[in-house]
Length: 350
Image 1 (cartoon, rainbow, N blue to C red):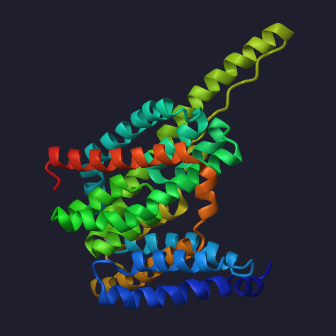
Image 2 (image 1 turned 90 degrees about the vertical axis):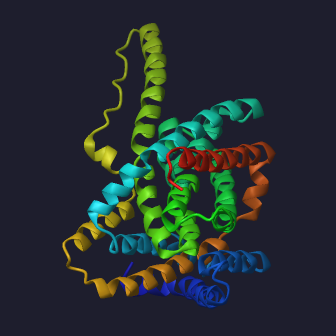
Image 3 (image 1 turned 135 degrees about the horizontal axis):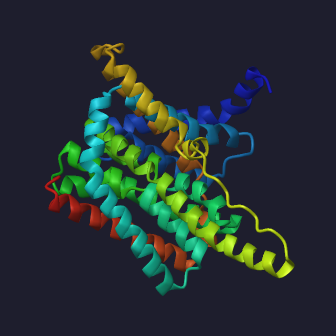
């Protein structure tokens, strides 16, 4: 497919998301407490409910909700230095690791109590504890989750992503959080990158920069979690295969080897781009006066992406998810939020 053909295919949906983002930006100017990203996702969701996007619009809307957002994250990195990324990452570790452990334990306990089956419980747990759909996508082939379980988990996670974008800035202002404190809160308690960026951008530019760095470190937790799950699943499969092989008198199947290349592929490209952009900025290649312009472009791209996400809201998916997974998602969302605030208070991060 040629570049011109691709552009024509994406143009209608991108134009719609951009138009909504322009309106949302105007609303954000008049209502700074609400902000452009939240306005974009709400406007997009309302429009999507009134009239579902046609097939001609869907390719551009998908591109806006994914690639445009990822590009915005890379641009956010162009305003930071590697030293700052390292410093923020190390400082956030106690809160980030604490909330992750609490979330995974709560997912196991609450999921069992609610009767949510194993794979679905795992997907919602890692999605809430690490990075939403990205973590779900990384874990799915490892544990052998089926498509319906993935759909349930993604729908549940998405619902509370939207809730976090709306509720978290209100909580931050009510608690009088600084820009850095709210960035840490959003980066550790909101599960999806898009929602982290949207919530933090509503609070302020410094909060957004801080939150993305925290989110970067948190996303890297995909690697040990996936490797751990792969080891557990591999042990089970190897034991089953060995038993079957011994009964059949054949050699057992060797375990899957996790090479550095395979592990590296678990990290999303845009987070790598974020670090590269920060490295370039650390060299002084990007002049200081250019940073406000980059921040403005990044903020608008975030609004475009969130407008597209609003347009693609799948209400039917929420209905299909059923009652128990939603309750599990709600409980984990509250647990992670409260544990993040509690650990921030204990570590003096407010």
